[in-house]
Length: 255
Image (cartoon, rainbow, N blue to C red):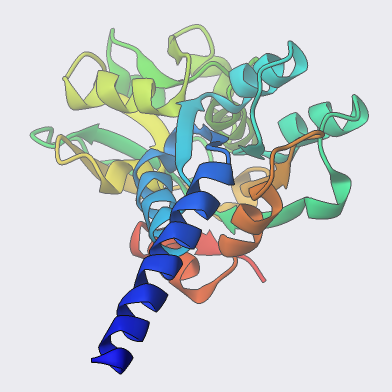
């Protein structure tokens, strides 16, 4: 009886301590590139189960997120779809440089609606404009959305950019570009392989050679003044369980 009471008291003490710990851990706000939506939601839930710290994720184009942080948004972690927007914050001393690292890679693909019968082999001077007919190509706005920049880089190196530059649906992020194609509003689009994989309304027509565009890199860092637990969350993204989830969604994990 005495042992049972002691065990019960110990259990109650542990529960009380855990509850207090949860109360003192702030909710983390993670700003992530739109292409990370599905996988980061799953990883954040896994992190919360392991640490009892809540995580809220906000998704948009990396450019939009970086500018929000510059404007004073209270984000704790930033995951960008390219190095340029992370550099943008670094030069303004808005990230903790000690936590910055290149986390992921991706592939660039040409997509069409799943019911489309278009066939194209990506190669120098391939007939992209002809395949579009009188319609438009959906991708991110190449002036500021990373996927659009990668697309412009690839199409320029392949010698077809000038043929389609004025025929773009300039989406505000990659998931918007994906939706244009999935709904049949655009006959072709350029997105990441991971985005094409999560939308049953599209199919991959072909994959761009990696040599045709800038290397796709997703850097991560905590922001300056990030709340407690932010650095631990960034470290968690390197753990085997998180890396396995990134790979499950088709991302390339970087050493």
